[in-house]
Length: 553
Image (cartoon, rainbow, N blue to C red; front, side):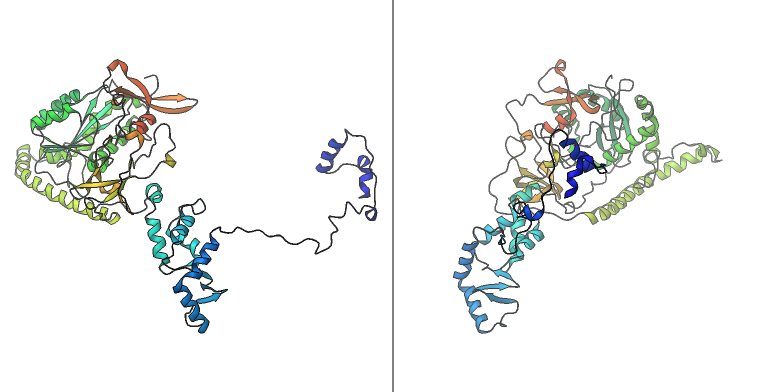
């Protein structure tokens, strides 16, 4: 390029020229033009003749490929097929012989009893290139070059029995276990269900709600609680607000809140003849009625107290009245009408010309009939609910002695504090042996002696272990009993939101077991859920989208 001789005298018109000028200005040099025919050394690479270089191609090879070829060559069944095809190439459609080897649609044929098949399956499934893919992807990867009789079945069985896949992969099947509705009670306020709503801001000193629901009439009471509350204080409120009005219940359904499994609570109701029925581990659907009512109550409070969250306690009485005087499809009337045998008072009622004496007579005559109709309505509602729910469920049963994998914390997969990346937490743990079948959809498992969790689980949390398992698996470290078992949370006394670098971090005020009330500490809720998952089982201290408590409270 003769133009380079005048580079420094040219008008620079491109960014590349500007760049080169800035680099060359620091040097003293002179550009001299040399014709191409005089510059043969510099042009040697660009003017090489064709054929002076040979093409070099590299490709990966399998180190055990020679052994596989040798194995095929020595297999008597395959060699017999090769001999038949030499005599009649059309004897077996799809098969052909190349260089003494048998191929099926250009895929090397192996014996179905080949000792290399297990090694091939591991290579194409367990390795990083295999990626623990599913059956179809593993099969297609193998089938590109290999074939043996029953290949699809072999690959399917291998993938199903893969231990890593059984523990780590998401279960995309419908939930196991058909819906099992609880039996309809015989009388009102005979069978109750209880649950707590926590994580509310302090309002007139109250920070929690005890929700009590009658399972027959659906009538509910919302009892306000102050922190710290204990089994004794809650029992006193229960007697004052429930037993005083409705008598001692015959059964109570609840989750496994530490308060409900406390010795005081269980002994108190045992002496009264009340049967305590608790949900299985990690299955809040057992008390689905109260869980749904909790959601309705929280929605009511958000509607009226979202602008002033600390006034929520003012609306509890109105929320209870609104709920109990609202029509329920399952019972075909309002809970108020079921309990008191008359319609709840409203403005339109006083526009009627009916006398009070006549109204009372009608109410008394229809009371018994109303209760009988109520049971019919509930049974019909349960049948409809079961029919719709079972469309998305499947019947699953296990035999005593079978091995199963267990899904822990299905609603909130948090890992231990030192391994907080929940995306990488195992999906299933185990395997564990089935010891006993309880009812239609619950099983008792043989957990390690150091386990902290209740050994009864709903069938939807279990998955059959495929393969020959004889040794019991381990639980996560955070679910094991340690020598420092005394350092274990006992109660949640409060909650708040701490601001760290502009990020909201929910915290809980924890009272520790075997420690005095003076030793309570503020702990991150994520830490408590990860380190002690069974303590906050079925609980959300901070409901998502709910009311937060300010740090200064």
